[in-house]
Length: 142
Image 1: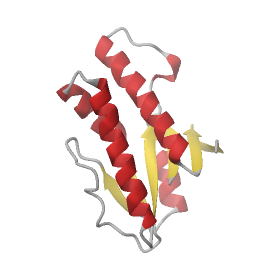
Image 2 (image 1 turned 135 degrees about the horizontal axis):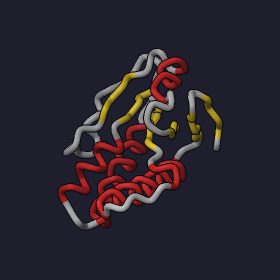
Image 3 (image 1 turned 30 degrees about the horizontal axis):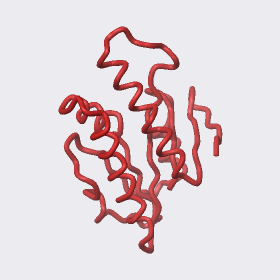
Image 4 (image 1 turned 45 degrees about the vertical axis):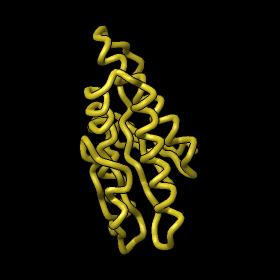
C-alpha cells in the first residue's frame, strides 16, 4: 500500500496522475462499505482511492461513537490489504492533511481533524511508502 498526504489544492492528484498514468481511480462514497472498489483493476496495477476526508466527515455526521468510526476505517484498510494480496495490484491512498496545527473552535470541526489525523496515522503505519505534497513539491516520508 502507498499513500500521498497533503492539504487542499497541494498537488496530490496531479502528482499521482503523472507518476501512475495507467492507474484506476476510485472516490469513496459517503456510505460506502468496505471493498466496493474491489472489482477495479488497472492495467498498471495501481488503484488510487481518494475521498477519505469526505467519507470520514459523512461517518462522523451519522454517529457520535468515535470507536465505530475507527472500526469502519479499519475495515476499509483491511479490505484493501486483502485486495492487495491478490495478484495484479497495489492500492495508493490519497489522504488529506487538515488544519496545519490550527485548532478550530467548533467541537465538530475539532473532532473531524482529530479523527482525520488518526486515520492518516493508521494508513501511514500500513504503507510501505508515504509521500507528503505541499505547494506542488513532494517529499518522501517513509
